Length: 490
Picture 1 (spheres, helix red, strand yellow):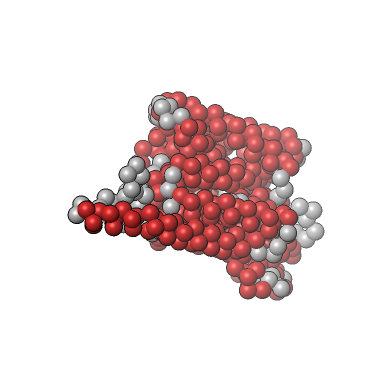
Picture 2 (cartoon, rainbow, N blue to C red; picture 1 turned 90 degrees about the vertical axis):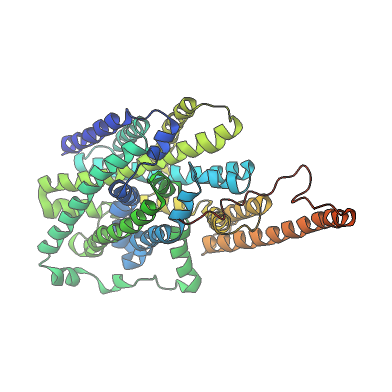
């Protein structure tokens, strides 16, 4: 079994290495030359989003908590993809960005760009850690080897896989991995349904108490918290934005996100179904995150289980590649290159690859000691993203506010979430962080507008008195770059 899984991984490594030879610059590495068409863009978005948390984490969470645990995955993350397709994809593509961090520089300032990158990078590393942990679980279930050894092997493979290729290699392997994933998960779902005697047997195997869509005592704001984290926290993730920016046109970016939404929901409900029937068919599991693998192994046998294991490995590889690429790209492009603008494309490419290795090691440590797959993904979606979401939405769709407003929203959003989650242990820290970021941006933005008026009025009055035409801004100052916020949708 282990040999079969490793052989599959070896094939993926070979594909990544072959395609990676076409990478000549950081632009190739991060954006695939903006060459992704409908098929590659759709499968890349789907395969990147359909990671370990959907295959393993979501099924385990539903096994323990029932349908209430599925608000985040698949439904919350599917809603995130839908929002990207409907509202964000065209504007982001038209803005001419290399990374999401570039938006903060173009719309606000280099300082805001650096702060945003510092908040975005940990998100990608946490998400990568979840995938590494899940890969270790697959190897452990396939071979029975020690969990630490399994996770170590998993980390080594994903770091090597990611460092060799770039977004183009990732997209092409995503097409292969996504196809295997869809086939594997569909076969697993059909096998479970047939072994339970059809749809009626599935319904009979589900505990009625597990069908509550919201946990008891959640309340109005608790429900908003459950949906806000995956939607607001993920729609501005660099991993998703990179696929949009790498598409060959704004139209392709938009439609690919919408098609990926449908594919994600169709395939994502199968692990949810297996998690629901798990307590009946496989009661008393010591580790709920093993439910999907255990049920498939019991019902499909060793040969079909290899197909399932290949599907899970596909989901993990396609996601962790994207996470480490995102962290490496943000660090090289929006942190290091921001301080050293004279760096050439080749130097930036080398730095990106070095960052990928470094962040891969960090993800490995988090995978060992950072908690379960589902917990890691939830932390990744929430960390620092409240302020990021607010600043991106306001900056992308309006010309209101400048760098001070962006600073206030980013700092207060991250600070409130950290304090609410780990110090005060509030039930809804993310919603509170979102509200705080909105208030901070709005208040500072209005102060900016008042100060600007107070500074400009004397100049206008003096110009009127002298009969000269007023300057558009004070001498020595530059107008705020609003071009990103007013980009054409076409």
